[in-house]
Image (cartoon, rainbow, N blue to C red; front, side):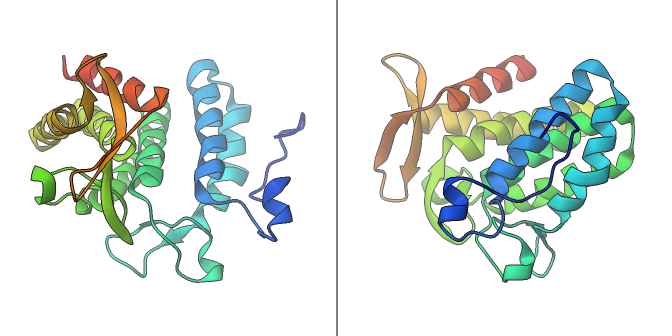
Length: 218
């Protein structure tokens, strides 16, 4: 984003050196999250115009409705099918919740609800529940999918009053706490594989999302 708020979905730096034509979804969505936060806190219409005029039309290029449930894939659809990550989509669903709360535009709530369907299509009974990391690589269930998933459900319950989302939030929170909490320091590990191997890397955003989920549920 330059001083004139000119933004597109082109990547630069190391990504260009890899002959990557455009950004992957995750860093692109990070720009969206930043601008959503700026609009939420300032109510400056410049940021909403930036979102609706440039960023969200760019995001549409990643939207894959050819596979159901529909969701955003990791690279624009003009390049064909690419992996669809549950965590990428949950961050966007949270942004759409924020946009709905800031604008009362039900289009954004509808998008959050649509992504909820995709995110929870990644939940099954292996390991007693939990959401996978990637639709095409169902090898691990990650805190980065489940913790914000619990936050999303808690926020959808607050917005809609539908207890289905409350129960889903509780189930997701409890599953993550049971399987991925380090009892020695109460910080969350990164993921657990289907063979019960735990990746014990720790990232602030994982534990931060569990803190937020706990606060919302309380």
